[in-house]
Length: 144
Ligand code: 5GP
Ligand code: ZN
Picture 1 (cartoon, protein in one colour):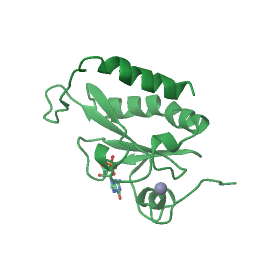
Picture 2 (spheres, helix red, strand yellow; picture 1 turned 30 degrees about the horizontal axis):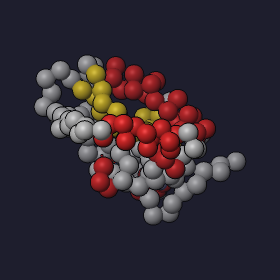
Picture 3 (cartoon, rainbow, N blue to C red; picture 1 turned 90 degrees about the vertical axis):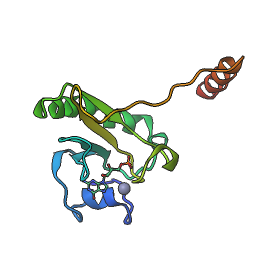
Picture 4 (tube, rainbow, N blue to C red; picture 1 turned 30 degrees about the vertical axis):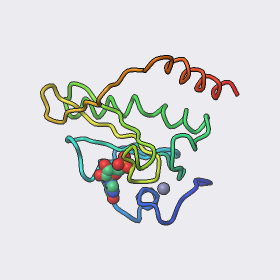
């Protein structure tokens, strides 16, 4: 029995249901992987859970574990098939982070030495005492 949640307006749910075509890489009862329609590199693949969830923080620990369990094998296959040197895994949450499709997905982006893709975020440093404050708040949330 299929008990997956779907959003009728979600593009990725429509892909899962076969209402929008995709170039399917892999499918099982919980996960679908397909080629991104606008790839950053050949073989750029999206891995999605079949349950419609918007953010990674919406996933139960069990569903997240099952979802991520598939990723190393898929990433390895994409890496070998594209003869790439490495790979970026990108998982965006929220518009501010660049999420456009509100259905959890991991990008597998093959990388080749010297490719012109780039990926450099401007790193910063903590101001006086700030690291302890931030650390305390996060640790508090984890242990609640
Ligand atoms: P986001 O910006 O939300 O992390 O990434 C969404 C990704 O989904 C984009 O890279 C975009 O190219 C891809 N995408 C959007 N619509 C479709 C579609 O209909 N089919 C496929 N295969 N990919 C899509
Ligand atoms: Zn969806």
